[in-house]
Length: 446
Image 1 (spheres, rainbow, N blue to C red):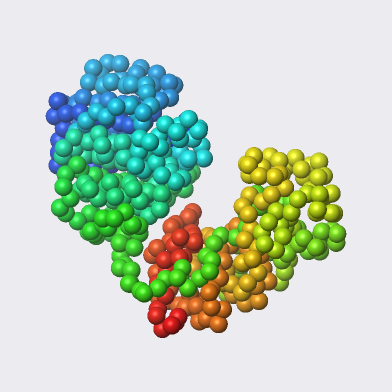
Image 2 (spheres, rainbow, N blue to C red):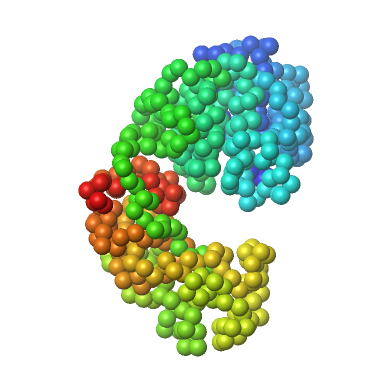
């Protein structure tokens, strides 16, 4: 990464995207093209190559870039091309212009890397600036607004926008236009980076045709996308979700990620080396990596030191006895004070408040990232799950064996495989918002 959010696009991908941009729609000299977040002008060079190859006049091209180093390089590179203008400005903060063609690899910048000023600037301007948005989603919205009638947009972005909850407003905006194609690329397209990139082609016209989906293995199919912003993942994966009177969420008290301390090296210790004076505050705990496929739950190897009472209320330091002495060791106190959560909470608090009244009930466990959906049964409620483990607590414990068995059935496994996000190496992310939507057959919970 050379600048915030910038990843150099391979030339072969640039040329492929430019082909898509001008496919059956050769640009005229009077047409306008925009490259948003143009960096040093890689896509503009791709357009020049295309025009030379097809003996076509160069259209009017504008590149917008915030980074002055890239602006200087691009201006120097194209100084002999009067058709090309490079402007240094914040594309997201500027007025709307209309363009016949827009192409980009917009910056990938999560909300955690944006300044407070940037967040305050963008949130009122964009429907997509909701929750934990990424900058590329705002670039998408801005560019859709900037398309001329019948204009065409070609973007390369992470595939996550097709299913994450944060991108729901973007999916609604996209289905107001004609999404022509979604092409899934190999995860290592950006050399050395695992990004799961996707090329999306959109035309500013009333949607009339199905969307062409091109998969990594080059197979193609045509689908109709949902109109209300719901996840496109089931449709893209070729399934129709069964309607059910109830979901996993309906029959559960809690479906959640485990406890995040923000400093596991301090709060999580091996049982055979723990100070006996801290045992009063320690509970058996388990991380996702300890859950091994085709094996039962492991023996207790670790305990988590918890400065909270049984109701989940943080215990004042002066009432923690030997635990206070341990936490006040200079190197430990320094580490705890450095956590982001210590800015808003007492410095000995966890990153997230643990729901203690739920954690030690009988529950079903799963890893947060997994090669396949796999579940383990903590029937006695022994383990306090850590943040790499998800836990499922039913309203009716008498059904726990039936539900546990169903979660491992072919029906449930197929649904999860089609609806879960992908992590590196094609692993699955089993997240609470997906688990909650898992349909439960009526006969299992009447």
